[in-house]
Image (cartoon, rainbow, N blue to C red; front, top):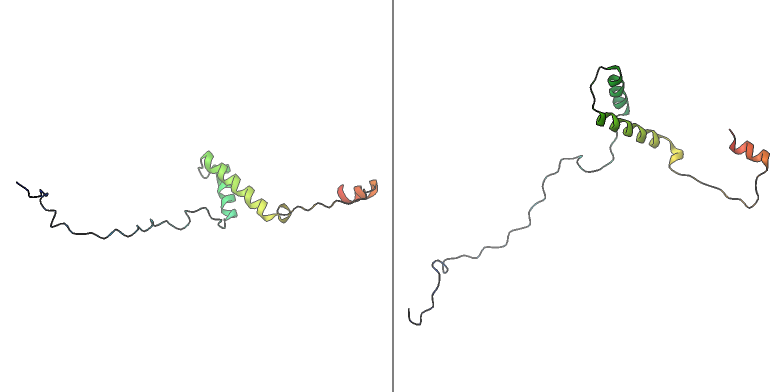
Length: 104
């Protein structure tokens, strides 16, 4: 080995490999993302009624989740919860006007 370069065996036979394309994202089932979905409130109510009567078994977590769903459905059904408007006037209301407007 005088004067000759020492190379590893097989280096001359190596081939160039192109870079890999980026991996495709994994398939996600529809509905796994946090999206608003239409809920069947009557089915949730029926399930809670069956649970209360002892006909269906539900865990405490399922009962709590059903309560939250029903509260959200109730809030969505009430349009006055979405926008609150206050009117400020420079002149205060008289006692009679205030009673007519705010005391139901």
